[in-house]
Length: 93
Picture 1 (cartoon, rainbow, N blue to C red):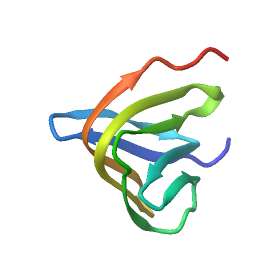
Picture 2: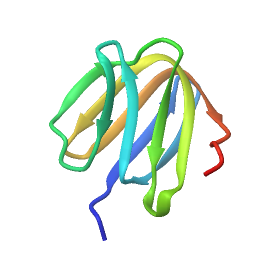
Picture 3: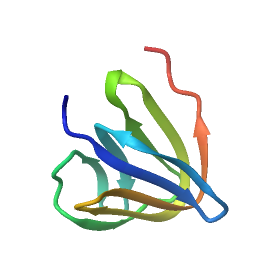
Picture 4: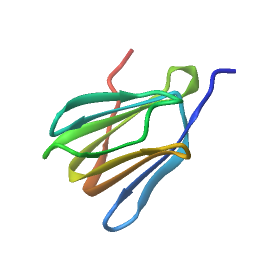
């Protein structure tokens, strides 16, 4: 089994999603970033009105429209703290 990231997606109002993922993709003010297990620690400012995608084992992908906030990558995983976030229907494969 491939290594997994522990991911938390939190908005100001509530914790929206917590679980294991293979990859997280987010757009920061510096550009789009993909986070895999073992990624160097970082703190990024999320771009306004962007999308965070969470790729889970087996190919399932979750997507959230976010407005502002931060992306934190540590040895413990990835935390996305968004001002607001709404899950979007994933595109058909």
